[in-house]
Image (cartoon, rainbow, N blue to C red; front, side, top):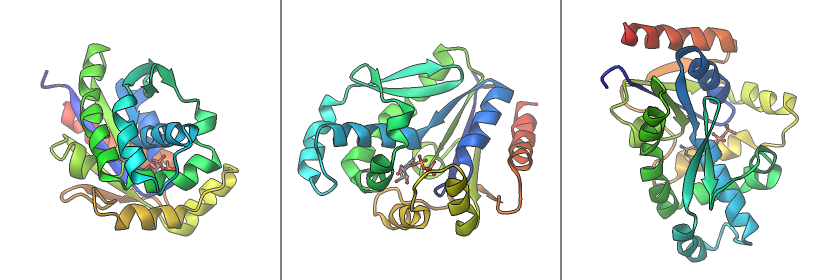
Length: 220
Ligand code: CDP
């Protein structure tokens, strides 16, 4: 299975990871895994159960009952919790966006997701995909440090806040970055040896082309 490629894309809030990864997954028939959506799905579930961000012990106690599964939707993997995919409208809502970085900073929450995320390789291979493109904050540093290709996308914080504003979504981009960068476990950082791409003055197509060229070269 040496031709199965793993591509890791990390970056801060609203840095363009999802649009880039989606486009690449279509072009190369890779499974697209947005790990931010996993942290968001878990957050939605915690909130649904009435858990608050300061109830660390209760959150830890709830972890074994989450029963993760995966649903494949086109080329996108969606996390199931207890057999249910949490709807996009819920995971992108303001309550989840405001709480997610706090739950994501709890080491036990990250450990619970680590094995599941690594297992997405098996899911991708079982469904006949030619590779896996996984985006997040710690993919190239913790989840797949030996991925075939690792990228870090960054963009000026003002440009990123503007992207969210144009999408009509309430999001404290700089605050989430601060929380994600300063946590002790698996903080947001440029993985050693990753290719750094500044997308402040690049459009989506230009970023996609840069990464696509690197993938094409690996596949050659
Ligand atoms: O809104 P955006 O797409 O930029 O963020 P996201 O990728 O949906 O991630 C939401 C939040 O999940 C982040 O702010 C992090 O707190 C957390 N996260 C994480 O801790 N580790 C990951 N690998 C992915 C997301």
